Image (cartoon, rainbow, N blue to C red; front, side, top):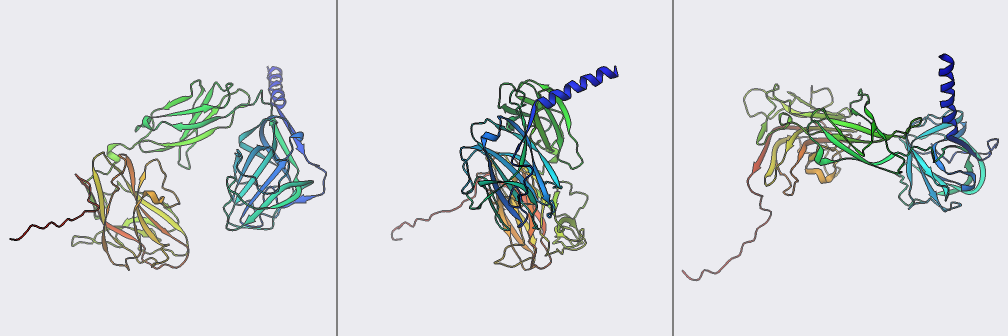
Length: 487
């Protein structure tokens, strides 16, 4: 039995090896080296493009590539994105844009001396009809002396640029410096006949989403893709993937027994036997139940700390939302509570002004057709005076599918913005947009401060009132005076 098992495993291993070929482009014994490509660490951000001739390649699915590090000086910090495209260009005179780049890798790279293999999250299908263009973009927060990579001389084969304040994009036009030392590269290429094509256009049918279920669908790139696998998990950091099926023969699948108002990540891949495709991933948020929604009309003064479960927090930074007694604008004689930003777990309403923070306090609401809504609340903050507008509060209506993250809500979600009130309570009323789509929303109070200036206290909010009206507000009106004649 052991002999048979060993023999079977050796056959599988041989089949896996025969399905892939590794090609080295460049002189692996060369003493030339470069620090410009693929990734430079001389500045916070860098961008390089390198072209490799079709004469040195074979058609197939490129699943990984390797570079040889001669010297390591940089810490592996920042996100590195690698793209590939097939182009007619035989050399480079500047950055190439306007081609069909495919992102094959995104993440950190832990460089070591010698060969460094980068396994792609999305293999690149190389047809052999053009030359191979590789683009690498680094988005970092620090800089260092750069690494050095083994290179071969190839005229006009590399273009590079680096800077601290440029966000590079393969779809935009950038100007760079041409170089002739092309990194030596190893490419692992799977035979197209045995290549397992990934799926594409993984999406959820929004009409299918309920409190406990949702339907996902996808397209295929090749007719050979007939069987698929699917796994899912919540977006909790401690969550692990659960595989629901590896024998799906349709181009859609309905997930059931989900939890209400929960964000799920779903991935789908093509099942090919020995080597499956890389997975494509998307996410979905199930609808909230009626019990999770804040009904309108609604009033909250935060004075009863046993009745605040409808409020959620998404805090990013040292300055965070709390509900407590450090500050309030109570309408009753007893001491009350409020919703406020704090840097000491709610003990005070102070904030740290030298550390960027973005924090959200939100509740869930549903708007219905032919209804009109608004919100009023008490607010005060010292913060930072105009014209800086860098420490402030916004009030937004954010669809539940959009995650409240370390960024402020986009401007088209914002219904109001509050700068300093000179530490005095003010009453603010904000109408909801009249063309607001009937749907589920996160009504979010979002705070942002930058890393300089600003003065405590931070923002505090109290006595929130949500209301609806039977008719739309009047935006403008005209008065026409008519002569009524003599009396």
